[in-house]
Structure formats: structure tokens, C-alpha cells
Length: 265
Image 1 (cartoon, rainbow, N blue to C red):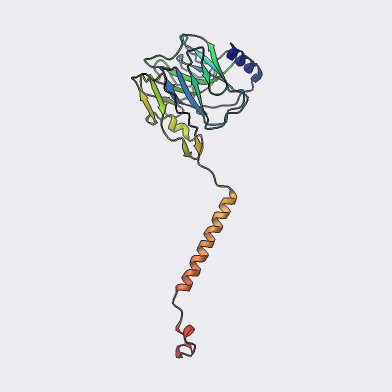
Image 2 (cartoon, rainbow, N blue to C red; image 1 turned 45 degrees about the horizontal axis):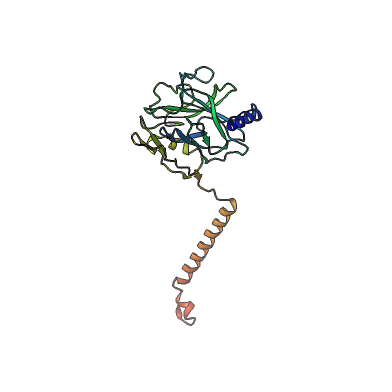
């Protein structure tokens, strides 16, 4: 009840002021059908008190405002909290089928109730921005362990391998295992995370107690202008010293050593 009250209060506080998140600005990094949990990363800053929705109902097709979800499964709401979520942050959503469901950042709860939890034989989960009724206004990303069967991504702005990922069919547990450090920008990770070959999927076993990798993503540092100047100065000094040493080692004319030589006259 306290969590639901917090979500309600945050929704009232947030009003209609939402960050203009676009497809690929969020990306799922783990999916656990045994624990009924998942993880995702922000690939751009998410403003305070941003309200986002998740649904494991199937999408009938079409753009937001045209298509619709079927019914029978859950729609969840997440309010990010008072602090902006910085790019590269990984957020865990745990035990979403239990009353103890939680997010590692912000408040998380059921918005529209149906059959709890993920299907053991495969499921699809969408993340999206929505209106007050929870209807999609912008799809952000999706993950499927059934090849998006029963759903279509047509006209949603999402595409598998670009900003959505289809992991191994029937996976009990799947997790992104690709690079999390060194790319030039956070947006550059979107294609890697959406690439199913960068994931490890397990279709058998009990993974209810397995926590996802929550290592944040990072980018390669960009040198400051002063660093470029220092680097250029250093190269210049190295070149000057190299030229000086070469000149000192070069053979001098005989007349420089024997001033009385005929060769000097």
C-alpha cells in the first residue's frame, strides 16, 4: 500500500511533464522468467519523476494511438524518483509477480492487473511512455523470449536488433554479456544490446535466485582541450630533442677539427 501510495503521489507530482524519451533510449539487459524480474539501462539521461510503463501483454500492431495491447497479463508503472537517472545506469526490477515487487531506483507497482509473472514457455515485455490511462504514447524498447510471437513491432518504432531484442526462445534466464565500457557514446550501446548474439540464454534450470549483472555502462573519456595542447607540446619537444641529438651525432667537417688543414682554406 505504501508503494502504491508513493506511485500515486509521484504521478500527481509529475503531471504531464515527461522526458521526451525515444526508441532505444532505454534497453533491457536481463530477463528472468523464474524470478519474474528484469533489468534495463538508460542510454540517455532520464528526468526526475519520469513515469514509464511495462506490459507483457501482446501488441496487436500499429503505432501508439492506433494499435492496442490484448488483455489478461500485467501492466506495471515505474516512477523514477527525485533524482535524474544518469546515462549508463542499470536498474533492477525484482519479483514483479509478488507483493514485494520493487525497483532498485524509484517506485514500481502494478498499474493494471492480470495473470502475474512471465510465462515459462516464453514472453514479451514492452517498455513505453504512456498517457494517464496507461496507453502507449511512445514505445522505448522491448524484449522477447518467444520471438515476438503474438506481437508485432510494425509501426511501433521498434525493430529487433536495433532497439529491441529477441533472446533465446523459451529462455528462463537471459542476460546481455557484451561490452559495458569503452564505446564513444552511450547511444552506441543500443545496437550491441539489441544483438541477440551478445546475450547468454538458458532455457532449462532454476534461476529464481540468480541476480542480473548490475554493472553500469561507461564511455571512453574525451580528452580536454588543455590535454590536446599539452600532448601537442610534448610531441614538439620530443621532435626538437630528436633533431638535436641527430645533429650532435652527425660527422662534422674535417675543417671544424683541424683549422689549419688545407681543406679548410
